[in-house]
Amino acid sequence: MSGGHGVARGGGGGDGRGARSVHQDAADAAASSRTATSSSSSPPSAPVVDPADERFHTELVVAAIRAPTREIGGLMAAIKKHTLDRPRLNKVIADVEEREHSLILLSEASCAAGAPVDDYPPAVTEALAKTPSATLTTHVMHLGYDALSAEEALRRIIPPGIVIPVGFETVGRVAHLNLREEHEPYKAAVAAVLVDKLKQIEVVVNKTGETGGPYRTFDMEVLAGAPKNDRPNAPLETEVNENGLLYKLDFRAMYWNSRLGTERQRLVDSFSPDDVVLDLCAGVGPIALLAARKCERVYANDLNPKAIDYLRVNDQKNGKPKRRLAGITCLDARDAVELRVSRVGFDADGKLQGVRFTQAVMNLPQGSLELLDCFKGAFTRDVWPPEALPRINVYAFSKHPTNPEGEIGGLAAQALGLGRSAKALGDGVVYRRVRLVAPGKHMMLVSFVLPEKAAYKTGYKR
Ligand SMILES: C[S@@+](CC[C@H](N)C(=O)[O-])C[C@H]1O[C@@H](n2cnc3c(N)ncnc32)[C@H](O)[C@@H]1O
Image 1 (tube, rainbow, N blue to C red):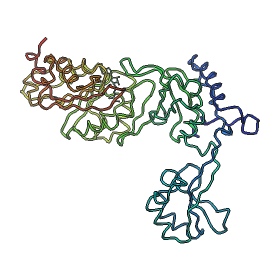
Image 2 (image 1 turned 30 degrees about the horizontal axis):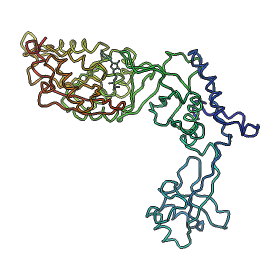
Image 3 (image 1 turned 120 degrees about the horizontal axis):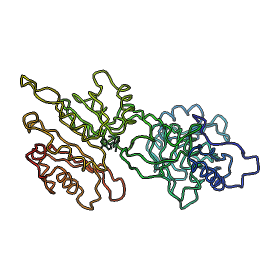
Image 4 (image 1 turned 135 degrees about the vertical axis):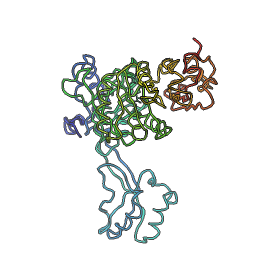
C-alpha cells in the first residue's frame, strides 16, 4: 500500500494469537491512539489489524461454470460482466475434479450460488445453452483478509449493532470520516483497513469539531497516514479531480466538499459564454475555475489567504492562457463587491471603462444571506442601468419544514431592504434544493437578478 501506511502484519497467524479477537486488538490500538491524538503533536500509533486473525477467514460459496478448458475463452467473452469481481482473485481456475476442465467463477451479485438458473442474467443462461459441454456447479473458496472488501473486513472488526462507517467523503488521497462515539475503540483499525483496501486512500482523518469559523474549516484527527512529526496545523495536502479540473488544497486549512461537484457544474451550466462572473467566496476555485472555462471573464475572491494561495496554484495548473482568472483578491466579500463596482465608470470622454460583472456567486452558505446587503445601493443607474444589473446566486441553509424557498427568498429580500416577501426578488427567481445536509436541513440555491429597488441608493428601505 502506498506510503507505507498499510495494515501492520506483525504477529501473523502462527504466534498463537488466533483466538485473541480483532475487537480486542482494535480496542488496544484505540487506547494508544487516544493518547497520541490527545497530545496532538505526535501521529497516531501504528494501526493494528492482524490479517491472520481468524475472524477474517471466510468461506465463500460461489456459482461456477465447469467446462473443457478449450471452451473457456469463448465462454468468458460471452459472460465476462457476470464473473467474480474481487481483488486478487482469479475468475478462472483449474478444475481439480476433472482433468482438462476449468471453472469460471461467477459474480456473487448476479449469479448467487444455489439460486434458480432462470434468475441468472440472460448472457449466462444463453452461454450455458449454447455450450453443451458446460455445466453449472458451485465452488467453495476460503478467503483471508486480502480478499475481503473494506466493508467485509470492517464487519469483522466492528461488533454487530454498530454502524459500519463506509459512507465517508473522499478528498483525493484523504478519506474524511465522521465517526460516532461508538466507533472510538475501533477507529485506528477502521483507518488501517481503509488505507489497506482502498487504492486511492493514503490518509484517514476523523472530524472532531463542527464546521465553522470564517473559513468553514473543522478540527480533525489524523487516524492513519500522518507524516512524521505531524502538527495540528501542518498542511494536509491533497489533489482532487472535479468536473475535468484538478484542485490542489490543504484539507486542514480550507474548505472543500466533494459532494458539491454536481451542483458546481449545474451552476456553471446556467452561465452563458458572455457572462462576467464574480465568485465572492471562491475557496480554492471549484466554481470560479470551471466558470473560467466557459465565460468571458471570471474574478475570484475569498477571505482565507491560504485558500487564495492554493487558488492561484490551481489557476496556473488548469489555466490554458485564455482561461485564466481575470483577477484574484483576498478580501471580505463586501469589499470585493465594492472594489469591482468601483473599477467601472466613465472616462473624461464619457466612455465606459472597466468590466461589469453579470453573475455574482456567494457560496458560504452559512451567512451568505446576511452578506447580501453588500449589493444594497451599491450601483448607480448611469454606470449600471437596469439591464446591466447582475444576477446574484446565493447558497443558504433552510430548515423550513414545508417551504424552504419561501423562507430563503424572504430572508434574501429582507437583507436587500425589500421587505420580507420573497416576491420582491422578481419574476426570474430560481430556487434549487441542492442537498439535504442533515435531516430536515436543506442547502438551497436562490438565484435572481438584483432588483432595481435594491441596487440603487434611492430604492431600498433602510
Ligand atoms: C463553503 S466555502 C465555499 C468555497 C468554494 N466556493 C467551494 O465551493 O468549495 C465558503 C468560503 O467562503 C469564504 N468566506 C467566508 N467568509 C467570507 C467573507 N466574508 N468574504 C469572502 N469569503 C468568505 C471561506 O473562506 C470559504 O472558502
